Amino acid sequence: MKILRLFIIPFFAIAFSLTSCYKDKDEPINGGQDSEALSVNKFILENMTNYYLWTDHIPGNLDPSSTDDSKAFFEKMRYKGVGDDTKGDPWSFITDDLQGLLEMFEGIRTSKGYYLYGYSRGENDDRLALVVAYAYNNSPASEAGLTRGSVILEIDGNDLTSANVNQFLSKESYSITLGEYDRENETFILLDETRTLTAVELSTNPIIKSEIYDIKGTKIAYLLYNSFIHKYDRELIYEFEKYKAEGVSELILDFRYNGGGSVASALNISSMIAPKSDIGKVFLKKEYNTVLQDYLLNHPNYGEDFLEDKLTSEAYGYGEDDDITGMPLTNLDLDRVYIIGLDGTASASELVINGLKPYMNVITLGDRTHGKYVASITIQDETYDNWAIQPIVFKSANANGETDYWNGFTPALEASDWPHLGDFGIDKENNYVEHILAFAIADITGSSAKSIENIDIEKSSVKMPFENSKLDRGMVYDIK
Image 1 (cartoon, rainbow, N blue to C red):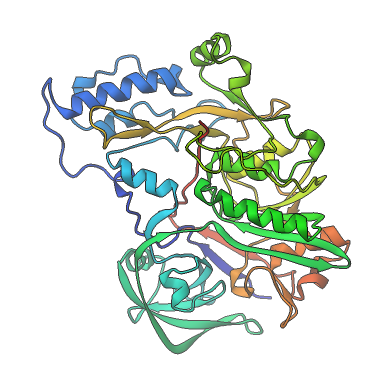
Image 2 (cartoon, rainbow, N blue to C red; image 1 turned 90 degrees about the vertical axis):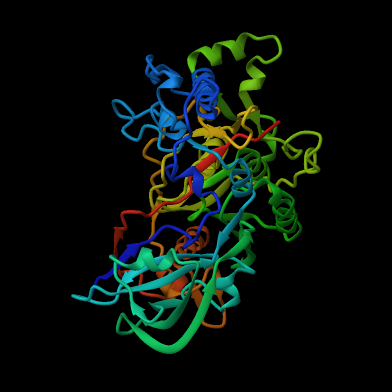
């Protein structure tokens, strides 16, 4: 049997408005004792020294007046990793576009609104077929009729290769020529059908799909949740209220594309899942740098309670001004939960896995997760308020003290993500169940995955990463 080669392109084909977080400055700021650069550099050094998790690894000879490039100055402080921790800190960053950063946290981005995989079109064929893994609702992609499994074979009339695909996808607007996947012959067929896509500013609702299935008398809820964005927590709570009302007894959380986000959202969703008897128990223990940890632990206004976040019956929020704060949370009172993850599943997604482990059976399936066990906060420069840093400030541990999961979580059930085979969820009309979902349902019902999904699960795929592939992976501590 032929092996279908999968070249993974883990990005949204998005032109982020927050470009300043990731690119170097085009022009340096003029120096001098009164310069913006000097002030920003002092702000960086002071706050990184006080709050950065790896403050002990900041070089001791850094001089704020040594450079006009504040982003380069910040980079000198990032922890590079030692010993088993080869990953170090690839997550902390600085921006001179605070508004863009805040919009990103709220799911606002300039985008065509889809996430793509790239497949080889055949043996000894350098051309790629781009397959839509998902498309956001009300996005240019979805309005053009693209859904999971849609195939793109040309952009602006050109064949796609690993050498040119990123150049084409980065364009603000382009024309796509569609194709289709022939399962029987494992080939892609070019269609005489085109669409035009133009990037727009989107507000991306992370709840991609929420469904309830009744299988063999068992009510199973399936939630495809793409990011922990706090402003959508009210909608998330409503979904869980539906699950409760329908008598759901099993839950499958699909975090396969979820790179993290709000800690408040992670706490809220976990509190609606955990056994009712464990509400009020520790979900997250925060471990700051040694000096800050000692200060917080012994200060009369903070103490041990400040270092712990607990499962709750009322929603966490940003404070009294947040209309979701204190909202009653429905609790499903489950003794197990299934969580789908891939190598892009990170941060707040992994926080849910780790935080629930002491209280219930967390069954992971898919692929090994990313391994981000730390959280950041946003610190704004009060003098030049367009500048802000997003440093890692603590690592998360669960009630059992388990942390430092650099290598992510190994799945109990291994399964590959194959969007070319069909959409998410269950398609009753065509007797099809999405591949990884089928493994979860099979485990719940005691069936075989092959009988559940009605496709040949013996097929294999080979992942080949593109050099500049990048997912947003971040866990932001946002509880007042």
